[in-house]
Length: 317
Image 1 (tube, one colour):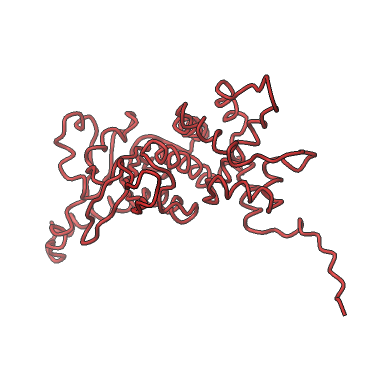
Image 2: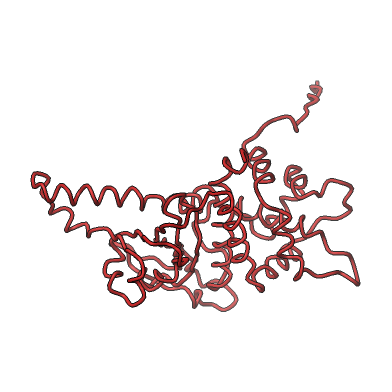
């Protein structure tokens, strides 16, 4: 005997994903971001009219938040009513964006460098609200793995990626270098390089120019002596081997140890954006070939990560 189905109202369940999307709907400055894209967006004078910018931008952001490829995003729009609702596609729409449409929108953002502009716009809004002070910066870099497989059209690994050794382990991929506001932990600058580029090489470019103090780990030793670095005060961590030699019983060594602890407390803020990138948004491996495309995606993710970190202040404003 068949059991009679339950009459459930699925829209009443407050899932974590639904709450996340509702929070981001409220904190993302949609109108200003749309105005940034509008001059470059096709007008659609012939053929089928293009989807609204707002719809495509919301779909693009969901891709970043949930780590979806273009085909996976298309399927998710068909399978998940919550995604359609967030993108405004449930109000009598006769078609949904396919993976080619989603791909072309991403290419448009890449071609015009809009990820960098969006990060700058978001940071400007956060600065106006007093959430970024810009008196000091923390710089750091993290390795992002790239696929090592050669089972592709070219039969080669990504030529713009490189291998490097960290500790006793080899990595193949790229580096994401970031400059972070020392007070809030919000990212203000993003640079993507091959994995074998030394952290020091990108350090100067990570500064916005208004800071007076910069904090960095021991990998940036010698940065103070570089040309152009003297305009700010660099607080670079002591090398681990040197710190292990400190004698806690010696008064001077105890002072040095306390200074290192204070610097480490400030430097720890740079780890928060990396945690959001890799744990919150699940970005642990490059999705595309080439530094430009992957750097654009990482920049977009850090811009959205800034909104995520500042969401409580923005919602209460």
